[in-house]
Image (cartoon, rainbow, N blue to C red):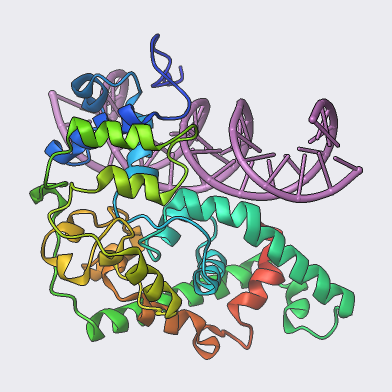
Length: 310
DNA sequence: AATTCTCCCAACCGCGCAACG
DNA sequence: ACGTTGCGCGGTTGGGAGAAT
């Protein structure tokens, strides 16, 4: 006997969310914080199933989400992490606090997979005997697993070091924070609804506008944001959500929105990976000499050995 | 200008796991 | 120990937007 689907109830709405629904959801979360999703539809009056509410929040409404095109660095990070962790998108997303697992998954499926395939084809066209990984085509599954374990061990070690180097004093506890500090007004709501002509919720701007005025702290200007991203800073920080956090927010607001996602492997470190400045992780990830195991880098594994595993 | 094709992403679905009674 | 419930995750899909014909 299988488990009944959670959304087979009559009257449960499906499909794209409307601005009004978003506001209802955000209002509720403002008061109660995310979680206890089961009670959200009944308490809000939303004709959505709990799952849908959770997804809408985590993938779209949650402040701090960066949307739009991925940077080269993000791309490389994803490729490395995918090679290391496989399709564990939630785990990968925990290293990119501004991106959702869904976003990363979509980006992988629509862009990176093709990109890697193209690269692989290109290399194959040039000849297959040169690359070290080609030697590993014959590597047994056991060998590959041992190598993967070594990689994971090294990854853990590197993260331990990273954590000990950079101990962030902020220990957020989402349950203790008010999620959105000032209530949204009906006029703000209608403004949002009116301003969005036709397609709703397809841009960061919409969400930013939606949430504008909810924050105690002044949102960062677009100019500042673009300047920041243009500077090519690799220091990803949970406090730098596009919806308007500044570094100084960390004392309260941003901590509230900290990703709940922590990879199970990370729990033993007593801290979530998102708290680690990702520059440290990136340095480690991009340092070929660190990730090289038995002379084969992870990228090689991705392009060669590991490709057959997907 | 109209139609078809392709790409992309928000949302859905089903499964597994953990907590709880 | 077992059944139920709720949540989180990964895979898949539907439909809108833009490109190509």
